[in-house]
Length: 469
Image (cartoon, rainbow, N blue to C red; front, top):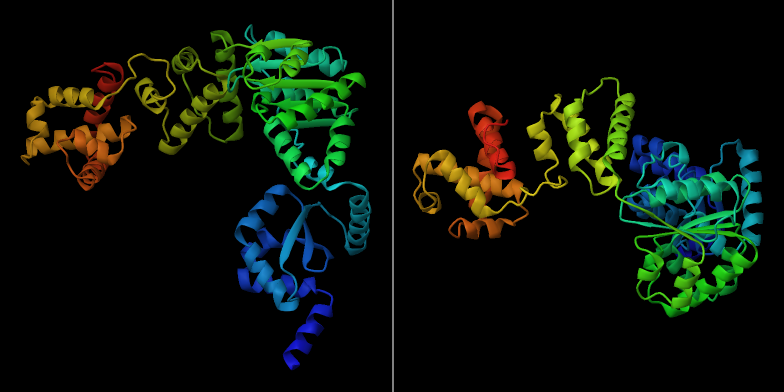
């Protein structure tokens, strides 16, 4: 009886957030508290949950994934009926009086704004780092760039604007640039097709389709990325079609991106594809050599400016990257990042041979088709032994090292699993494969001759070049 009275008193008391903060600092440590938990502000208490605020979405996700359960347990010590904690993104940088006012204003807005709007705002993230100034243009993307600029200067100039191209060509960058430019004077919504579908389904389940329609049909500029993912889902396409028409009728601008032209979209209603084709359709091709070269030079300069010590990537290597990495701009930038990282990890400028190894999966080289059989053949020739000797069970030293070397090269140059490698080396156990790899890795560190052998063999396997190191 006494326990129930105590629990009742606990539940009737207002939550003392200052005490809970002290508990968090004590239980989870000062470092964790100062770095993350100190940024939490208490907003409001409800029947069975509390609402807290944090300044950024990243902090919310970090706290939620690592400390939420512990915080909830601390709260329940003071309020048994609290069963969950919710977070709101709200950057309050003021004293307590200002904080109360901010909290009050927040909840006044919260009462007038539907949950749907509040949740969309979290995904309406326009990246200030992706703008027209840092979008590199060439013959492959100039038309798409010029059309995007026109739309940014005068909405409804081309309506809709439909930009398509392969993965990593800069479509999202262009859409982001348009949104960044137009949001100064317009209500802009930038959302992926996948997120649009998710919110549509969520609205149906919660019986809030009216709010969904109001929100999307009241925007001045609607940007939807990767529209090809809006396939199937007839009910959702129906809603999108009417939203599309409504926005066109009121003069709102629609910009869409996809990985293919409108007529090649699969499982999209014909009338929707027809609407897409009714505006300006522009494509982004693979970047040509000149554009790739400019991107490489600029990215290297940009990365060097971020660090105190500069990495000198020679013109020969820059030209090699520009020539061989042709699939997309994203892969090109990824290649540069790899090379810069290699340089900083090993504190040296990589030579051409090392570049080829670091970028082996990106290079547009026909020789880059590695098989276990080719590795075994090359290693046997290099060490002047027969393949039968290599694959035998004999453990003579002159056979063990070549065998381990071939196993090591197979592990690092192919995507084969340990059991698959074992089968190709006379059904050896996967533990033998692991031992061989570790042995060669240790030898490379202390034996210059072994390191030289490995580098020579890599070049022969990957590029049929025997002397380049």
